[in-house]
Amino acid sequence: MDILTAEFFQRALIGGALIAITAPLMGLFLVLRRLAMIGDTLAHVSIAGVALGFLINVYPVAVGLLFAIVASFAIELLRRTYRTYAELSIAIIMSGGIALASLFFTMGKGFNMSVSSYLFGSIYTLNYTDLWVIAVVTVIVLATVTLHKKELFLLTFDEDAAAVSGLPVKYFNIMLSILTALVISASIKIVGALLVSALLTIPAACGLTLARSFKQAVALVVIIGELAVLAGLWIAGESNAAPGGTIVLLLIAILIASIVAKQLRRA
Image 1: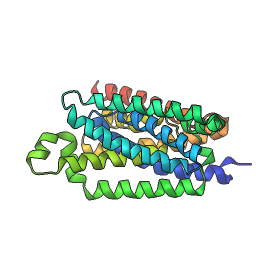
Image 2 (image 1 turned 30 degrees about the vertical axis):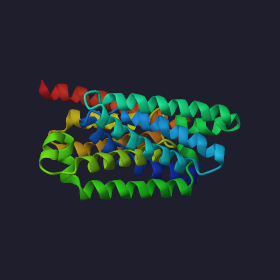
Image 3 (image 1 turned 45 degrees about the vertical axis):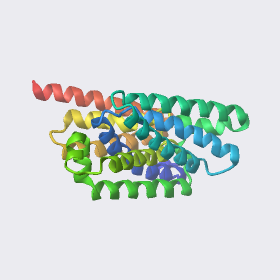
Image 4 (image 1 turned 45 degrees about the horizontal axis):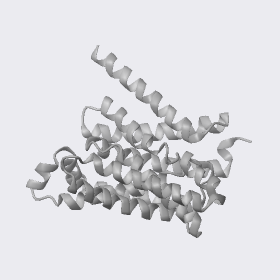
């Protein structure tokens, strides 16, 4: 049977294609603001929420999303508290997320195998509820970024200038954190919490390597994300390999090719 005709694979392609739009897009903003590690942090916190969801028998992605949103507010609060050491907020919240996850793991040993699918990704098990969640997140992210593209551009490149110009910096910082939390929570079942930061940062690294303007970078990160996810899924499906790992390795290969292409262009 051709794998492309299998219903589970078609659901995987749809979910992957949607996340390949939003994750690289949000990753670009994070990388430009030097907050690339926030992806790992929120992913670990989301896993704690997923584990709690299994423990109390509530839709795990919803609980993971709630945890990620709360963590995004906490990160922003700590960033304002420790302005000189902003990265400290990420380390603190990540530590808390790992601690909670380990606690919930020990409380519910019977569901550890289910939670592990969120650690390493399980895109082939996406159901229609998962697809609806991913679709809603995609619409929210794209609508918000489109509506506030000028403000986000100014905030990303010069937060102090944005504040001086009267832009509500606190509001937009929280908004970006919440959007990132939404994307990460929707992504962890696709590539897994341990690999989700790759989907956020590597397309951004490729785009920034090749692009000559911010608009070009936005377009490139989405194109690269789509190429890696869809091609990675097809390769994994045909070779019976792990889809999350295949996608990330393909992203790394594209990054290497991007760096080589830039060097050749300079030469």
